[in-house]
Image (cartoon, rainbow, N blue to C red; front, top):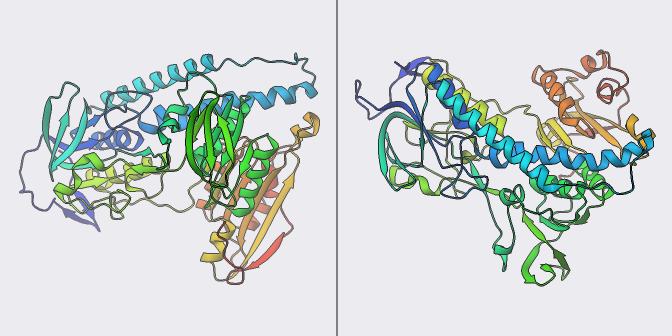
Length: 498
């Protein structure tokens, strides 16, 4: 039998449920994405009887289709990274000429071949995730799940048959879905779901948005030879990241040939014989084969029947949870993007792991959101961990020491590509503790992952300095930045709102 949950060291049963009550499952999970699958496997390994439901598989999601593996595996991180790899070869082939490779002037790119390879990989991963659940002893149901009581879930199958199951605990892990802006002609645009499965590579693309998805798809399509216009409302892309690094990304995108339209929004899309006419709020008119809306995602909570059972949500539809991922109903929990805390796949995995330990392993655990590294897979990529300079100024009362390094990557000295790598460390002047690290350049995510461990361990700048670098490498710059670029007084710099 599953162990009772421990909170603050005391055994706790679910309020409102009589001891000895029989349930079909100890845990029933709605949503078999990264978070749901992790919670199912771990809970089962801890001795719980687990059921999980997920919508039927499809590469493009809707309210009635999805697939085991969820957004990340089927229509997010994984297929996107495959396309980033494909797009990166465009620049690599250009650079190869100066390394002695004799290439013809024209190199053809077969989009359909890459698309099929991507789809094959997604199908393979979907099968792997199903086997992971089966091997863990988790019962998988295909259909739409909704909550009909504090301890009851209803699953509607493809043929309309409704099946009900009782569970001591219910976990919601339904993720989020891409949104479309409310403008005339919005039905002519697409979201990231469709962008990952386009039959034809667009020759002209307009991307609306300034976040991860917008920047990544602009890089992908441009790398494959498309003409790309990137339209965003703020002065700089990637709001929430370090301002200095945001400017670096913008320069790199422009250097790669992407047309940036800051402080701009779209007002209307019109279908014409020549393509989609895109009208901006500045009166500009652009023509595109594809218009991508990368304007945010909303929690998948509308069809779960939450209001009827008393589960509280915020104005955006995100499920409200406490620090242990518990909702306003003691028997119902939620993890991942549906809670809109920190919407990253590894974070959903962390939340799911903590949930399983807390509820079924007697090991009270709550997610730790400090020093979580992340990456924007632009070309070249940006990766960060810890505090940005702006965040450090806001959160730290004392002075900060800012260390930066801007250099031409060794590879570019031969290829001739004019694209700098930029690195940055934010250090607390009083304690010498490294508060944040950023990098924009080749291999940034691989390097920052290692730096993240150092920050998690509370590393100081002196410890960075005493570390021997790997030469020649870009990574060694993080342990050779000896000269302070600038000293910043925590309360003395005005906040930016770019």
